[in-house]
Image 1 (tube, helix red, strand yellow):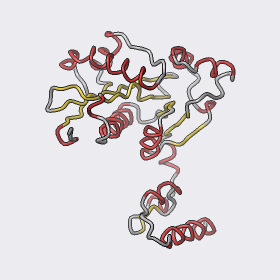
Image 2 (cartoon, one colour):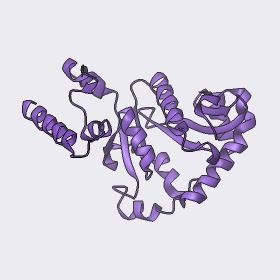
Image 3 (cartoon, helix red, strand yellow):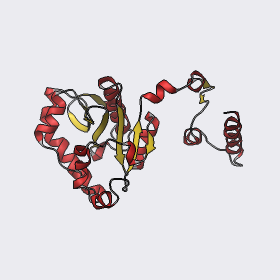
Image 4 (cartoon, one colour):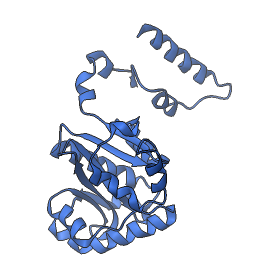
Length: 232
């Protein structure tokens, strides 16, 4: 049984170039499993991300490849995407994807503090991770209009849907994190009340609940939500 505590997650450097082929092989395997046409990147492309300090790599015991993700910029660096998130099969279901995503998100915020971080996904697990990081679902019109980004969708089996809708919708869900949202928050919205966010989302609240047999805890929290909505 693989354990997260044995895995190091760090910003990739020149010393990790030896893992480039393993990264691409893992992407190929995942693409076939999901039935999507994720394009294999060139050695030079993945290598350049490592050399530029724009990639996150996960290694078990410091040497066995376990996962990867890299940072891309679009629209004159006004948009950032954490792309190529991959976890090797034997390392799945231990929370590694979440930790890699968190590292990539932190790296993006450090390198491009004013950029919007966005992504397209059909995976519920990725949506949940994004939600926890502060992403919100948006229409495609709120994503980058950089044509080079959208060209990356050409290898997907669902690309014809994107074409037919004029890039307005597809099977993927668009999600965005905008750093401006943090600046707009009122002080009281950032405070915590016994561990609860005063204005948390319904999903946040439900995920923290373990209802008892008669469901009274759920009734109580829905009352809490309605009460706070009346106040706001």
